[in-house]
Image 1: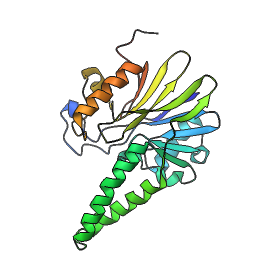
Image 2: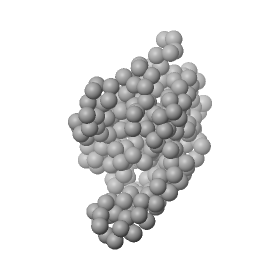
Image 3: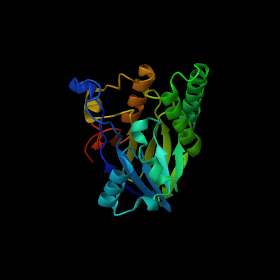
Image 4: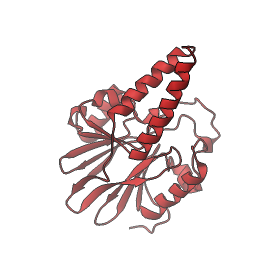
Length: 232
């Protein structure tokens, strides 16, 4: 199994640095997973051209080589590169797909009943609905390669159905965390994003992530060794 970070993410504003909103353009950490015949790109948060350049730099691959995309959540900052990946299968956690779909349908109904007062917002929402419809609920197991496998690992809280990926190998386990564990500062301080849909559930997911994995790929940072584990 080949697992590598294609692009490091960043928060639009980092609450643990005292930053306010709008400091930078936020985008998720993008991870490449190759197992068997599948080439999976996780959270393609950069625009098309930048994403293509990073994938070429890190793995020598064109975007056309990607067979599957996995979104840890439907956050817009994690999916900017989707238009360039229309040839691939798009996966997202089933709970996230269902819950976000209900929320968007409710908002579309409200905007329709407003009589076109907020037409731009309705147009953006309709585009997001089209993207969500294009996704498929991810299977429980996304890839296998020899003795290694990639499985869904639910980490709800930041969004209703945020889902990470657990990569189990013969020597260690790696967890792609998404925004459940966003940065090294959040990991070291044991904190979750204050903007989470459910902070209490987010804390439970954070604890599960730290409990299960030897290595963590953070949602807006890099690959780190779990600080609660002994060196190996």
